[in-house]
Amino acid sequence: MATSLFYGSVAKKIFTRAFIAAYKDRDINHKQLADWIKLSLYFEDPTRTLKPGMLYHQTIPRYTELFQTGLCIFAFGFYVKQVRALQKYWLHEWTVTAILGRQTIDNYSRSILIDCHDVSNIATDLIENSLQKFVGIIEQTGPGHLHEKTQPVDCEESNAYEQYHDNTPRLKTCYSIELLDRQDREVKLRIKSDGLFNCRSFVRDLGFYLNCPSSIDSAHLDKLGPVQSGQSLQKHQLHYEQMVKSAEEITPACIEYLKQLRQQYPDAKSSGRFI
Image 1 (tube, rainbow, N blue to C red):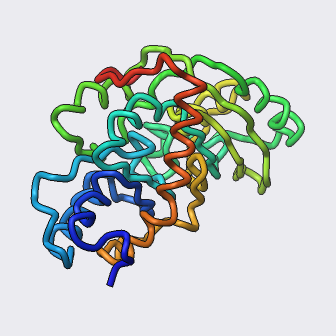
Image 2: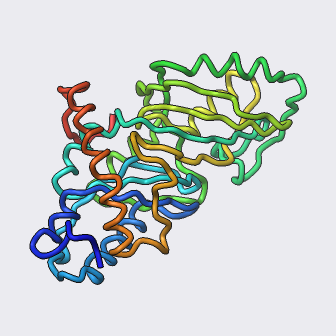
Image 3: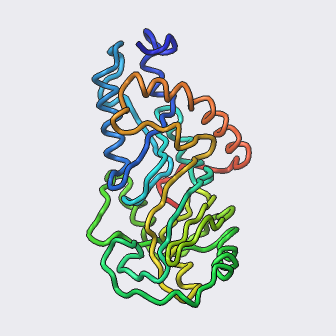
């Protein structure tokens, strides 16, 4: 059984005032994970206090690409509005693999290939120096939709989703970029950024800067604020008992992190527009 924190009348409160860490696999979107979580909570709750329609959630990050993997945090109920207002300031730590010289239709390495450019003249030192051009507050346009892969979204968020992919330059913050490894065309990077920074757009822009069109091969989200990827639940683990344990583990840290963000950004407000 779940721990005593969730017995009786308190049971219905845990998933209206809690956070859960789930693991996103390739080709799975947030909505699919959210639907699985809700079904498990509604049908496996031993107290029978959770009813369909009770659970409101917000994800961090707000949107992901279908090829992205790694950590995904679900905020429920009371914390939804706060997370919507502050999620763009939530620290994201990525491990990104880029393929230099591989020009595709949408800057994703596994999409239709346009051309494969020579990279023999691109030294590792040049890449390291170029990375620093993308650290700080930068302008970044949306990455565009993945070719032949349209990620479904909820109707009320469709307008914000389109803005996420459009070509309007928007201010994003990248705190640091570290070159972890280079094997010929393949470059592995660690990126720390805000919640607006887009990794596929970054790889596209890095290719432009190096005069060598490039594509992203993978993007793994290792950390979100105080939560590590290793604390997340795989899809087959998203059942009531496991989610209760996840909520107990990460909710106090997420609440404290939200308090810090509110103090740091007191004017942040929830908005339907994804800036």
